[in-house]
Length: 330
Image 1 (cartoon, one colour):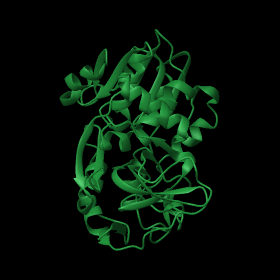
Image 2 (cartoon, one colour):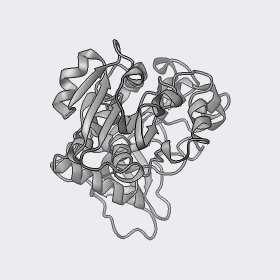
Image 3 (cartoon, helix red, strand yellow):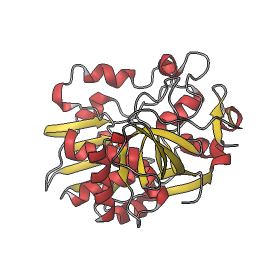
């Protein structure tokens, strides 16, 4: 067994099965990487379950086009394609497979070896843990883009992070704090003290309080859950504030369609984050981790053979931080 493949849509434990796949040869501008660690992200569990149904044409109508889930990794360069000179076999890297993850040719990362464009690779510092490096590729970069590029956070800004105990939230809370913001976190009461340790100034328990009904307002709202409507969330913005919806929402049928429609008429008050795991972004989030300006928290790390359990854990929305898959030893 050198990979986990998805055979159908449904229960992750049933549709993610072991397989033996040919070793992928790197093409021009690509590196083949021996995967040490990868991460389960939201697109992985969505595609595994085949929901929301609105996105089925993206995944594949009846079965997934790409059989191997996963886009992010930390590992060791194993082979180089024609024309690649900036990397060497044996280099320790983190990166992304790049491109459209649901295309038939997408290599995936729930496997021992994957392919990546060299402009989607960055060097992994020796003292950065493998699991943390892999988790930073999506969750860390999204948090970085949110507060540095899409809705730049300034000292004194009031920032609200909904889903603060999740994978992106645990990167976002300390990052916003390092930028000089006053940070309010929304999470369960059970995670309140723990999220304060990440840097939150105050915590709202979503089990007892609807933050959209409070007489408070924020300069930037990063909503990683999207239970609230765009309209309700916008009413909690300060003048000139920005809402960043960053979830597919709660509907198993329509997913993000309601907030996408609302965004079309909201102007600059509602902005979206387009994940861009470029080398520059990867280097920046690595530096933020090394310098302590953000943190990676692992909910747990499962062996590759238990990928179904890891995907189910991610889909449960009960975890603290990132869900990792350990593929091999570093």
